[in-house]
Length: 351
Ligand SMILES: [Mn+2]
Image (cartoon, rainbow, N blue to C red; front, side, top):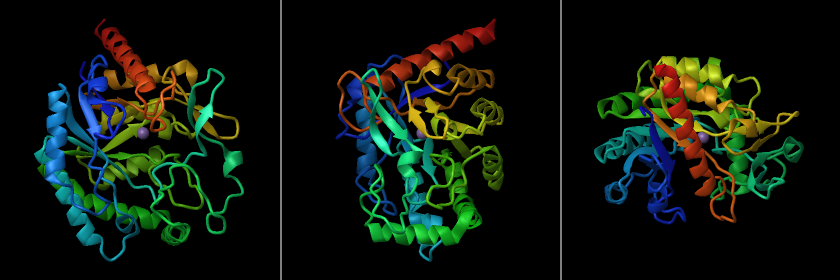
């Protein structure tokens, strides 16, 4: 297979071990990051070297980073931005030095993702992450104390309010401007060291609490890719993030950007969109959600996709506990399913 199958690993404290991961058929790459340095700090070379060595000891390659977080002051364009961009570039160089070929990041204000519950029980007893509008409506982060799961616990409520107000004033065009500055500085460095930067779409891809969102749909992805027209400026196309907006035709987007060779990394997972736009994360199988995963894989194969693929969030099944969305079992089932779809699509194409 041309695609490189990968798995996210949260480092040595992750209850999912490298041995577990290496036993998944077809597994090649580890997707990880340096977790003991805050955004804006320089990553330790000793940590990167240790990750590289540990992965190699298990027959795996540490060549995808998810993610190097973008400091809020870069996204907000505050006055220390030049210094922070220098640090960001240095981290790309250091990752490249230890074999990293792809770096994922996002440009979402404040929160990496929004869900209302992380352990919603399905009739079969499995649990998954969900976002229900009836649990979101009526919440006002500028007035209420909000404790949605995944909201960075390192912020106090007043810091969150300050950030939300600042982003509200910045607006979408302001955020685009700051993203442009980021790309023009970072992409040439990535090009130089053979790294493809892969932006993760906003999750979900529409505004929440008035926070601007820009990596959301085809029109905006086109705009993003044109800012720096380089393979080093590519997408991490997350089917579950783009796919929870009914208006996004994910198969069409995958086909288009794979044909342009601007997808460096695929996050494959399924979501079930409800009547009111709420969504539930489901098993990877097409019939379990709203995505046609086979059509997505076919679009990749038919365009010669040779980038990284990973099963994204899984449910918690078989009594497993751990980081919501990042257990071993359901993601391993997802990987097996993805392998099957690629094998089928590749054989189909050769006929
Ligand atoms: Mn994703």
